[in-house]
Image 1 (tube, one colour):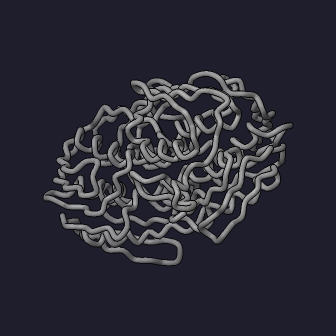
Image 2 (cartoon, one colour):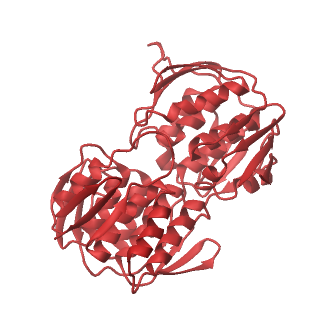
Length: 430
């Protein structure tokens, strides 16, 4: 196990060129199971969730090799599963929430599978009803036993209405529909950038998909999908993370290799905080020493900032923006609509001098700006971890952050990237 020691108040300065995003790469690797032909996946981040997923595929018998540090060759031939393999797979599934995306491809490969509720971040319950109801529409039978469930059935195309635009449910149903002959329709589908990435990959493998980037997807499946050469898109969440790191440290930064088109809701919130930025061809630039204040009232009272499915403001950025609000003049209400435990992370920010009121399990009122000071804090999930890290970059003194294996799940070698930007962050073995 490791911890970070962070010496705060060193303004960031420099450039970051992003690799593929965590939310993009996990479904992409899972989708390679839909074919036994070679798949080349590029722009892969070396995060722990990718390592866990690769381990699961290797247990099944996949041949996986790194061609370069960010490029994988995956061949999924002669796969098998038995009780011993199932036990090992279950152990790894419990390490990451994204492992839920293995259900559709494993059901295709083995026709009858057992699964266990995935692990990962402790930010509240994640209902899998959208997955299960969609699976049933496609002919899947589901049986539940304690924490496990089994799936089997004769797959058929169908119309599916998702009662909520769940990202992972959409991705699972996309993958299953991709190998069912005939046309399936997913209405009220999630349309996040990583769902679009998966759609584009599947079309390159031979699937016909209409409505890519919208909430109505028409999928004409094919049981003989080809291999693929695919480059994973970079992550708007990671881009915004480094921007907030720079703002908290009163530094400047240029983010390279990012599609700014998918960041509209993020820019809207930045505008509410009077953040000045320059958007160029595939990059964003943030200047140093900005005058941050909240201008969200617009004459109608404090409307607040709330999370919403894409293209709304992403829940994965809420913790970071709450941390940023401690350095913004004004009072800001944040409303987390999805996860009842996500804003609890803020209780640890009080150790650093943050001022706020938790109004209920989904809302918090943050008052700023305040001068933050050092503290020792445990990170319970990816998003709270980078939020604490951002606060520590702003704080006086030397802070300690434990539980950093959670950060490693989504951000490759984050301390090395920060060190290249003039931050003082050390990884220390405990």
